[in-house]
Length: 269
Length: 66
Image (cartoon, rainbow over all chains, first blue to last red; front, side):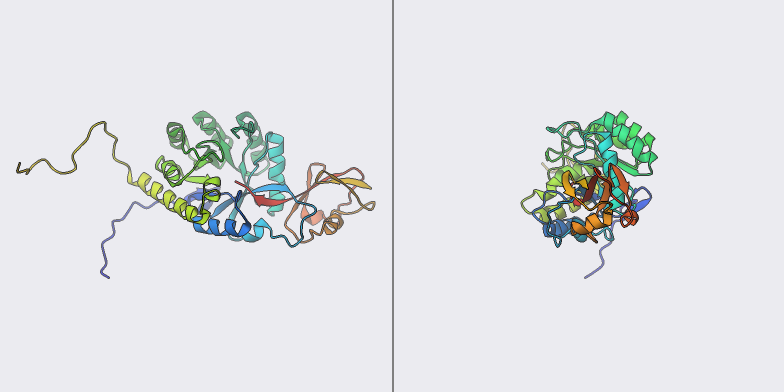
């Protein structure tokens, strides 16, 4: 093989959240898989380094030899990001985060989500603000799931949240990025990482989020509920990389009319 | 004495510790977190923390979620 000259792309700075560096910009959840083996394989294929988990009551009648999620997704290998999914009040969310911190030996990075109602799982922003304030005061590093309102996003950043995570569309809907302009505005204003959390359905949705300048994407259902989750996990890894490269490359401007790619000069007809 | 564990009533010997409760649940050595009456009880205190009549205990672990 001969060496082909490589075009040097501008150096990208890796994702940094709460002082820690990550090579992957894809964050994944662990819900809705068939079993723990599939979960482990899909997460490996995704290349994700940050993995979300939920905190729930231990089943008291359970088989003591039942494998545990954290045996498959080891905190030694991955940054475990406990979520507050299922919480509808600030109080429940704060309680869940404190349990998670105990569960993970003092690990204080959390994904705060306070939900508004069952049908849309839309974030309850007044309760989210209350919970964020209390958690930050208590020493947590808060990555916050929020609406795509640019002003609320700035408010959350000013409060000290370490990452802003607006939804692209409702959780588990797979509808894609519904309001690109708002996501773009949030990215422009923010000094902390902005990650689209929720709404991605397929690879192109993840690419769009990255082309808008997002620092990363968090997803679960799009991978777990694909016909082949492991293949989709790999597709998402590539989609995130493609979107990031396109963002860094800087896209051409959109035009209403055509602009010929072949020169007009030198035509012989 | 009667306590509530994860929402279910449970009869325990008076003064039973959290460590004893975890052993009874055959969860010893598992990665879990315990809350009594909505306050965290750190793992280091499980062997000494004696439960009282009517305590509401939550034993939680990590499961799949997004």
